[in-house]
Figure 1 (tube, rainbow, N blue to C red):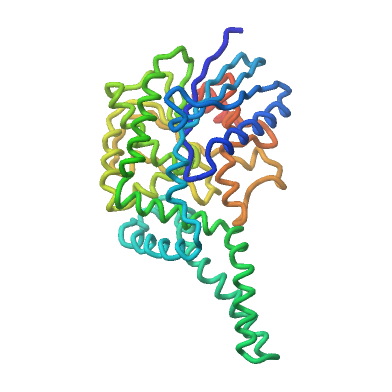
Figure 2: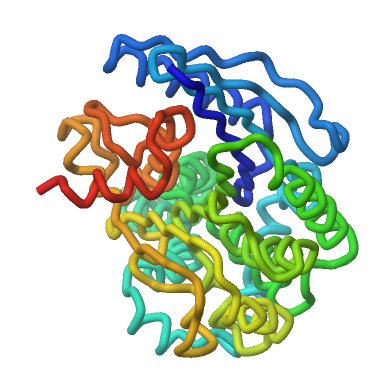
Length: 377
């Protein structure tokens, strides 16, 4: 069988865990894929990418049964995330309050609600719960104990109980992560990427551009979560380096897309310019976002946020995770919001043409995978 050679560039979201976590996740999901198919997929150790360890990490994936070799390159910006990752709870509370004041002034929530209601709830519930949960955990025990003890004793007990339990409950509901996410992206919308992030995106674009004419049957530029926001700026720079067009075997893949978080900020003029610059460019874009994922914008075409016309060939799909997971393993409900947002990178209990290992290590091209997925009743 003639080998199918694929190049994958992966740009992840707002997550400080970085390459070690994602390399291990890929290995685990390749093993799940192998358990379902009987075909072993070999994932190499990771090494520094050709442009340097600060730019990317590289590993190779071999699927001998399908005759596929994948060169997988993880684009790194977790060091930049680590520098803005707020660890002190009091600092997080103060900075999140300021960030939400900015979102209230500049975010087009009315239009966002018309696009998808779920992400609006996901954006708004963290600050509400961050106030209500500690307050209720302190107030309810204080009132109950005050029936038997002096009020100051009950109040002190309530405060202690709230301090011990509220952090765990809020973490279970993904509140701290979402507050950090919205704080960072509030600053990103208002101030732009800044010199360090723009320099990193330039280096990503240069690295991708030099690989597009390689001996590849397919080149995937995969963006996930907040990476879908940066992916648009990256794509604009890549197109500029390539004279305004990309080879036919290149596809931009958006997983759990969150572009409106910046695209609907009225003050994010720099980002609106990026989206407008892509309007008349011809390229392939496939968006895979799940309706139950409250952090993602299912069926929201990012190129229509700033205009009605676009030249890209676009597919908007739901991964329909419920068809491929057993009910006990399906990530539904409030307590699973974080995990649901990572199911795009996983393999379910049954194979899907659009699961991450099938897309990146399987024989089908993205176009073939989309066609196969559309045939599923």
